[in-house]
Image (cartoon, rainbow, N blue to C red; front, side, top):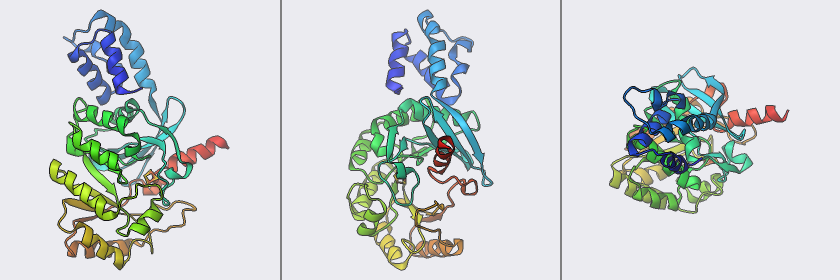
Length: 336
Ligand code: SF4
């Protein structure tokens, strides 16, 4: 279900703008069973009242928690089952963050990522994206939503931007707390500039060397790191939101002195933050995780060279739940 379809259905049942707002707000903040019908003083037209139970049932069926995996760092990975049985992962992060999935599988095929191994299976609808937020809000408050789960949001632009619009308005999430992540797709850069709700931007950079980046992200658009950073800087300057540059640290691949020089050349003086994320071990990926002390030394060097750098451990490391790992494990169990 798309959010546009839901709105149309509400209007057909007689909903005016305030009724529509009320239903969407209650849905994105909690379960549909808390419908506006029970709120004192809320008047809903009779045809809408008659239709609401069916709509509520459909919204509730969009997504359910298949399994929950709390980790010692305060994060909690959710394996979410969609109506057709497909699974995606959402991650509740410490301090009110939520990472959502925008696709089942992914076509980019990054060599260090489990999700990309099976290719793209299907798009996640805008209503299914918001349903992930609603499910998470049943467990704890959500004040920030990052589109860094399974999938490349730029490959599902209409659904992702529709969900962002709703979350940034009736969903009551600050625009800079909505984070659109991309491997660097020109269609996304172009559309984001035209959005009324302008999210912050995260770029999966991973290497400052064009050939190495092309190898690591084989089906990402063929823009050079310089072109990508230029596009991101333009967006950061027009929105005022700093860009998050994502860098999965792979031992012996992109943690050397050449990359330090490359990062300084690319990012010095830019409105952005570099997030170094040591690789979350994936069986058979052919990469390994650098030692923590080595990661700290790298972060210190970059900071000393004037790059705003944060070293982050990927949430849920201790539950064996890197991007796509929970889903892969569940699928293996299902197939026996
Ligand atoms: Fe897709 Fe992101 Fe995995 Fe790359 S890292 S394959 S873009 S889900």
